[in-house]
Image (tube, rainbow, N blue to C red; front, side, top):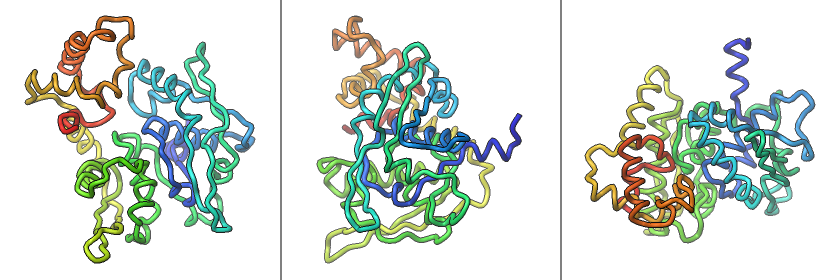
Length: 319
């Protein structure tokens, strides 16, 4: 049996700051798969190479992120097609922009309920078992981000955690910052929408669920917001973290107080359908008829809304 110290270290994610601040567009599931790959690669005795496969099982995913095993099977299967297409860019030592993929190969192993990935040379180079200059690397515990339900929260945590010792960040240029959070050029173009839907909700979730307390100020040039600076501090105690997580989960994923009419609006929302159409078979009544879909999803929401975790339930009313 591993000691507590050993168990904690096995959950440590280490990435170079250059990779961590790269422009990227990973989904929440894909970020989680990369996190597990980083952790597991650190546990190998032979070292990580760009031709060594890493196997992530549905059971491993379910245990790390506290989801049902069936959900884990679904997300791994979906990741087979999407993860290979994900690209990102970063600036190298020559100050040139480099474009690359996260993985060079991906395979869903159907009999084992697992996904096998091979990381690209660029990613492998930036993942290391840090033994030397620790301030060059971003380190955080998987448990801190495993409870975050928004991809924007995870990315913001990754971006600011490297500044916890300095307590203040540099200026995050708005356009670069949007890319680092994974936003497309057409996503939340209005600043009010960006702050409400992305930035403020991510700050709130980080403050409620993780070991960091963050806040930000916006910087303007004339009347235009050009970027954000963050204050970052570690919480003195994490004793109330579990309680905060439970309270926040209830607030974000409950359907209490929502009428059947509102639930119907939620289930008809295009984003809701895109997020959860994998829950029903295309040949089932709910997969073929919109009314049957609405009836099925309303019942599922009433039965256990906590299973719908891709984004806060009530957020679908605003789309």
